[in-house]
Image (cartoon, rainbow, N blue to C red; front, top):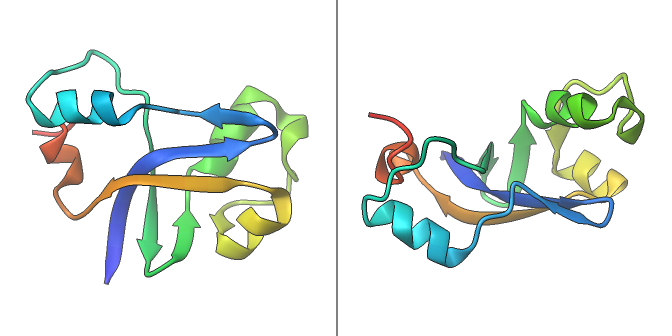
Length: 101
Protein backbone atom coordinates (compact mmCIF):
# COMPACT_ATOMS: atom_id res chain seq x y z
CA UNK A 1 0.00 0.00 0.00
CA UNK A 2 1.04 3.57 -0.67
CA UNK A 3 1.43 5.69 2.47
CA UNK A 4 1.37 9.43 3.04
CA UNK A 5 4.46 10.27 5.09
CA UNK A 6 5.36 13.35 7.11
CA UNK A 7 8.87 14.13 8.21
CA UNK A 8 11.93 16.06 7.16
CA UNK A 9 14.96 15.56 4.96
CA UNK A 10 18.69 16.21 4.99
CA UNK A 11 20.19 17.82 1.88
CA UNK A 12 23.51 19.57 1.21
CA UNK A 13 24.53 19.53 4.84
CA UNK A 14 21.27 20.86 6.28
CA UNK A 15 18.19 19.39 7.90
CA UNK A 16 15.20 20.94 6.15
CA UNK A 17 11.66 21.11 7.50
CA UNK A 18 13.04 19.60 10.71
CA UNK A 19 10.74 19.05 13.68
CA UNK A 20 11.49 17.18 16.88
CA UNK A 21 9.73 14.22 18.45
CA UNK A 22 8.54 16.61 21.17
CA UNK A 23 6.98 18.91 18.57
CA UNK A 24 5.24 15.95 16.93
CA UNK A 25 3.96 14.83 20.32
CA UNK A 26 2.54 18.32 21.00
CA UNK A 27 0.67 18.21 17.68
CA UNK A 28 -0.71 14.76 18.50
CA UNK A 29 -1.86 16.14 21.87
CA UNK A 30 -3.90 18.83 20.13
CA UNK A 31 -1.55 21.83 20.02
CA UNK A 32 -2.41 23.71 16.85
CA UNK A 33 0.07 25.75 14.86
CA UNK A 34 -0.55 28.62 12.50
CA UNK A 35 2.21 27.17 10.33
CA UNK A 36 3.54 23.61 10.28
CA UNK A 37 7.19 23.08 9.36
CA UNK A 38 6.90 19.63 7.78
CA UNK A 39 7.48 17.90 4.48
CA UNK A 40 5.18 15.23 3.00
CA UNK A 41 5.86 12.51 0.47
CA UNK A 42 4.48 9.18 -0.66
CA UNK A 43 6.07 5.82 0.11
CA UNK A 44 5.46 2.21 -0.75
CA UNK A 45 7.58 0.02 1.48
CA UNK A 46 10.97 1.71 1.49
CA UNK A 47 10.47 3.29 -1.94
CA UNK A 48 9.84 7.06 -1.99
CA UNK A 49 8.06 9.22 -4.52
CA UNK A 50 8.21 12.92 -3.76
CA UNK A 51 6.13 15.07 -6.09
CA UNK A 52 6.76 18.45 -4.44
CA UNK A 53 10.38 18.58 -3.31
CA UNK A 54 11.89 19.57 -6.66
CA UNK A 55 9.81 22.75 -6.79
CA UNK A 56 10.53 23.48 -3.12
CA UNK A 57 14.28 23.21 -3.69
CA UNK A 58 14.04 25.34 -6.84
CA UNK A 59 12.32 28.06 -4.79
CA UNK A 60 15.13 27.97 -2.22
CA UNK A 61 17.92 28.03 -4.81
CA UNK A 62 17.48 26.76 -8.40
CA UNK A 63 21.20 25.94 -8.66
CA UNK A 64 20.81 23.28 -5.94
CA UNK A 65 19.05 20.77 -8.20
CA UNK A 66 18.95 19.65 -11.82
CA UNK A 67 16.42 21.82 -13.65
CA UNK A 68 15.16 18.84 -15.68
CA UNK A 69 13.87 16.96 -12.61
CA UNK A 70 10.12 16.98 -11.94
CA UNK A 71 9.98 14.53 -9.02
CA UNK A 72 12.29 12.64 -6.70
CA UNK A 73 12.19 8.91 -6.11
CA UNK A 74 14.45 6.75 -3.95
CA UNK A 75 17.04 6.31 -6.70
CA UNK A 76 17.26 10.03 -7.47
CA UNK A 77 17.39 10.86 -3.75
CA UNK A 78 20.37 8.53 -3.33
CA UNK A 79 22.12 9.99 -6.39
CA UNK A 80 21.83 13.61 -5.21
CA UNK A 81 22.28 12.96 -1.50
CA UNK A 82 18.82 13.51 -0.04
CA UNK A 83 18.16 11.53 3.13
CA UNK A 84 14.51 11.37 4.22
CA UNK A 85 13.52 11.07 7.88
CA UNK A 86 10.05 9.62 8.30
CA UNK A 87 8.34 10.71 11.52
CA UNK A 88 4.80 9.41 10.95
CA UNK A 89 2.69 7.97 8.16
CA UNK A 90 -0.81 6.83 7.30
CA UNK A 91 -4.00 7.87 5.58
CA UNK A 92 -5.06 10.14 8.45
CA UNK A 93 -1.69 11.56 9.46
CA UNK A 94 -2.57 15.15 8.53
CA UNK A 95 -5.78 14.91 10.56
CA UNK A 96 -3.95 13.36 13.50
CA UNK A 97 -1.50 16.26 13.78
CA UNK A 98 -4.25 18.86 13.34
CA UNK A 99 -3.18 20.11 9.92
CA UNK A 100 -6.39 18.97 8.18
CA UNK A 101 -9.95 18.89 9.44
